[in-house]
Image (cartoon, rainbow, N blue to C red; front, side):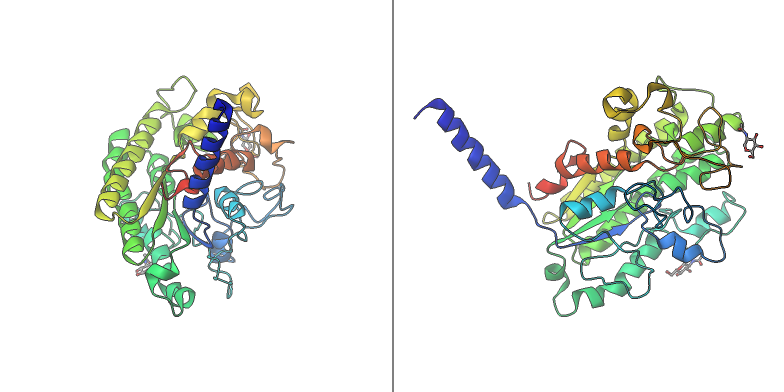
Length: 368
Ligand SMILES: *[C@@H]1O[C@H](CO)[C@@H](O)[C@H](O)[C@H]1NC(C)=O
Ligand SMILES: *[C@@H]1O[C@H](CO)[C@@H](O)[C@H](O)[C@H]1NC(C)=O
């Protein structure tokens, strides 16, 4: 047999063994914050709390209208749903959503820690919406019987993918925004991470097998935090990319702690497939190579939609407020509104989670 034939046979064999291991997920559940919220905050906040993602130009890409997402278009969870031929996830707080293919519990602004932590410690001087991770878990527990109906939990979730997070960005943003020091923010990372790991533990104990746990993106590079810290005169140290070094150190610490916690879950539950999803490096990759992603070099740390200034973010004039315009081509920007990413960025992240290199294992090889 010619050598080329041997190789093509080998290639064929490899392809088959990969596809045989591939789980064809038939349902998808998500918990998280505004990075994957598909409409819950809008439902929860209306009419008492003002929201800004209910007006154009939110949703202008793909959907063509505001739809409860915090982006110009789709977010990571949408690309994951599309990959498996599932409908884009409905927000769980919608009236009687069809839950047969899963539902989205994520709420914009949600924290890992319970909201009373932030109120008690004076991180905020207003009431936070009660939608943190544990509350979302409660919502899931309540919905479980109607999803599982007759099957036991381990059967009923045998082809279900759970995406838990990211969580943590809001916990840290509240702390940084309150002017806390690096040491103070760092000191509560273990609690934030432990709470995420506990939630995954509860889900696995309750029958989940496939759980994706994303880390947090480089929030030291987010235009809103950059602008805020500069204004507070707390931006002392910048890295080569122009991001906030103190924020970045705490961000990396969170991600390391989360990976350790996942190793713990894997030891505890040998049957479960807990996927480490990296939200940090896919963003850094774009910031380091903007040209390769069609992003203008001078714009990497500028929001597409914002009220001006160095980072195109101004708390008095945020995206969707009168007179605040979006850039023409959001796909040429990393950040959409200073805090959230553009659809193009989310697509890059989701692809890295599905096929690698930004997940361990990649979701499409969840059984490897
Ligand atoms: C938030 O909701 C949960 C129920 O999911 C409740 O136990 C808790 O007391 C509430 N917390 C606040 C601060 O309202
Ligand atoms: C921020 O927006 C306010 C309100 O539109 C405006 O008065 C102010 O000049 C803006 N600041 C910057 C730095 O653009």
